[in-house]
Image (cartoon, rainbow, N blue to C red; front, side, top):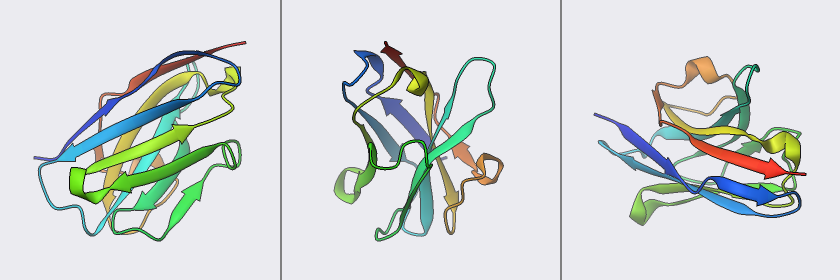
Length: 123
């Protein structure tokens, strides 16, 4: 059974940084894509960033490109999202997700989800 557990959320002032972590367990993720999504109150879940577990390919939403960086530590089965220069509009619940095969920005195609971690950015 695949399990994804996020951590690292919290309250930060605009311009600050946070690093989110997602620990994955339950199988070998070699041929999996891993993604970060977020959902603000009253809004649809949106793509933030994604990568291939085996590495080399990453993708970002235009709204976070240049500020956020996705990475993973295969030895620890952990994916990270480094978030810099945070803005009030980044406030949301952030979810880790994975799917077999290549990555996509479409959240409906991801098979497994974590419980989410809240990020609040004060202006």
